[in-house]
Image (cartoon, chains in turn purple, yellow):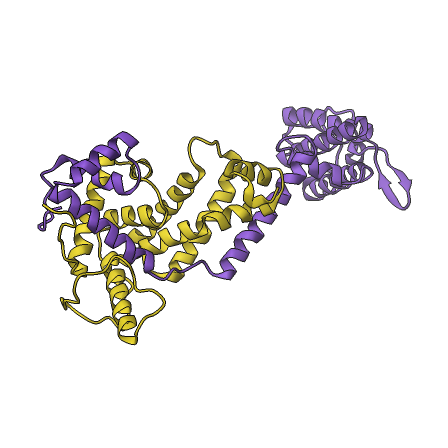
Length: 208
Length: 201
């Protein structure tokens, strides 16, 4: 290396000297370069400088990451590893929805379906129910949309078949109503979709 | 077999199978290199801690999709490097680089450095001189252009070869070698190291 920092004239200074110090030369290249070092001032200077700077660098006191940072990373790793283990132990990949479904008791699905249906329908009819029967519909009252319910432990439970049937009836009446006076709105259709979804999940669970 | 005896690939597989301790082993294995490199780049301990943490959090998130295309160490240092460069750009730490309170000279000639740092039997004067040397070295390193500083730290702290440094930083090996040469030249001047050939010529 020249004292002015200009590019060295010797091509070995440019390409070999530092690779010699880092151990990147092959055995043959190394022998050749060491022979060259004996008479090349530029290469000898650079090799000496590199060793000196490396020596000082190695003597610098080292900082290390703080204990709290180490602990945080360890905590994150533990959380990440446990999450992955739960998913992989089921033998399925990325079936988080399935994992969620299996944690909910089977009996809760029809209860939830019935509750959503009751809530949705009652809100809809409170808001804009007509006082007369649907035009052209065989259903004569809003209550006709509801499935039959039975009493069990004080909770009204509708079966899957009943909720599915109710969903179908809502859809049918919506088509009819739209054709006549656009009575039922999109909320009710969404509600029917949700009931159908719950019924499908319930079916899947009971068949497994 | 102890986790410390496993290869990087084995530790990654173990971690992906749910063994969190395997990741801890990886962190311990590379913390000196990664933290040393980051600290060298940003010259600020608090920021280095933040970036060190962020590096390993990113590794955690990326490991499930990690496909071994090269050395894990290079991939890890690549993440650390990107974060360090981003931090330098965003926070402009280059203009507020770390300086020692007891910095001493401007151009004071303390003579040529001895490659061997004085050992345990040091006089007080030797210790003071040594501390001055080290302080000057830190300052000189901090004042290097970023692209030269990163080559120095990747070479000396992360122990990468010049070919690995070239691959990591996306330049040719000749560029990496050139940056190191210029860095050494700047450090030598700053440290007032006498440039004298050690061989007879």
